Length: 309
Image 1 (cartoon, rainbow, N blue to C red):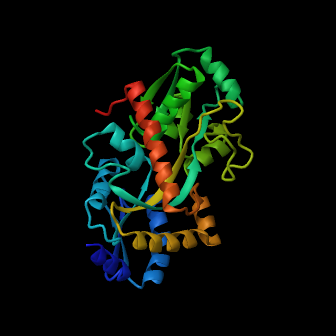
Image 2 (image 1 turned 45 degrees about the horizontal axis):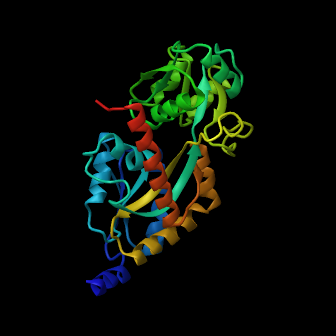
Image 3 (image 1 turned 120 degrees about the vertical axis):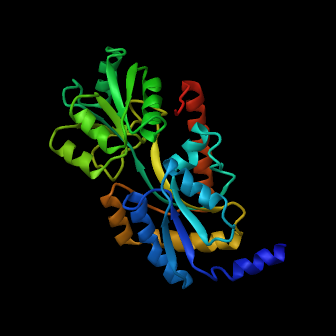
């Protein structure tokens, strides 16, 4: 059995590689897939087929890869949502974010942002927390839906900051910035977007902080959380995964190509344009990230009694 696995690993890849995207075409994950498609094809001299399998908040595409043959020819670009959050929200989702996959490499990371309606009488995060504490139950925050990263990040924020606020879920992220701009809700914690950046530039939204302890080079001059809310840290990551039990030589070969590709200046510039910092990692670094995030969000989901209907 071991000899057979070694032989298959040495022959990798003898057929095309399928790169599954657990979302519809046209989004951030698509851009990442196409940035890696060329380097993978060139390195392995095989076609790399991008396969969009959207639906179920990423669960359909993740299940497709979790139950594929562990030969390195079926891969998925996932992120914190389908990998670390969804299995905690839906125990019967059909896969485990850790044991069902073999981590290959991080692809990118980015902080979330805290924005408020311009009518909020605060120009920094400390001032906003003081104001929100003085208005228990009167403020509301938007999210892209129950169990979304923005929702969970907001729950964590309000709990750690001692704020009582009302959750108002919307259908998708695009609607959340519009909701805060219109004054339907007072604040939002979310991944950044070009549309949000435009609203901030037009003073229709006020940007207070990024959600990582330290500032980010993606948003120069915007403070992090370290001095105001120590211990609070949220970032979104994207990573490349293979089915569990994929041969170690295959994982190592894929890792080398991905890490080298992500170090290219043109990919760094391309990723920064849609608010991500490109950067590869060892498989173990990605495994530790997944493990920590699963523990973190599962604990919050249980403590806060969050349920998807």
